[in-house]
Length: 375
Image (cartoon, rainbow, N blue to C red):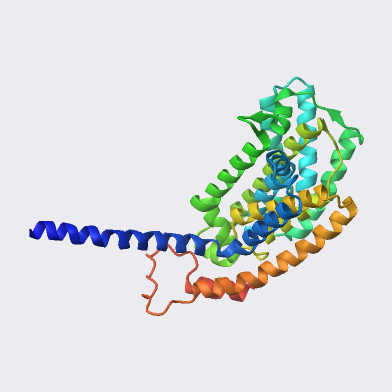
């Protein structure tokens, strides 16, 4: 009888405990969205608004695939740009690097190099350009990231035009074309590529020492150096990442238009920076996530797609997109600060935060004080 009574009591207590765990898990998941919650709300609101405005054209499967395919290049570049901003820098040369790497790939394809090898070499070429032209000068010689990447953008634009004599090269590779316009399991290949790039970027940022080092360097260069992080190597590697993602985006662009063009899109780096900032990454570095960046890219893509389907002219699309981006970034910043303050405020009756184990907290009190002095 006692055993049965105990079992009955346990069975009555289990559901509330399980419900509490589910509630706590949902609350924790919602709290985790705080850094990019404003842009998440914006994306959802924009999707609802466009669905109501254009019910027969916008929410179709074909249009949504076209929308995602159209932002594939911006998506890939923005993933790399997130690492640059997290480290406290920025890379304005990504568009020129992508054009140069795409032209390099077209040239070696013309020499008979297999398409798969040519794609890998093009990505490595772009990463090498980023390492040498940006990473070395910024990380090793301590030059301004803005001046260096702006100079690289100008120089690489000149190099690709001199190399190509301002002429495009047609690319007939089936592999390159398939990466840009093919389908796998009924879904456009660029969407699969976007998902793969996101997974790799998220894993690198969240679960690798390199990702943690980037956050530390962006938070305080002096504190990161004092904690034993090789800051120079980290910064150089960051610009290698931005160069590699720019080159990969250049490969996709070549496949989508069927030729390697020396034309450099000067707005692409700025759109990438806007997407990263819109996603909650701090311009000063040390805070942000590729999840927010993905939402920022989606916001830009959904906005441009909706305006295009709605019949808004291209010039007005630029005007409206620019105004809304400024308003969205401004609103996200003002909304994010109270959210983060509310989340960091201890709740009544809650236990004091546990002291982290020795060696697990990179920013000690001394390091934080030195970081403030550095700023």
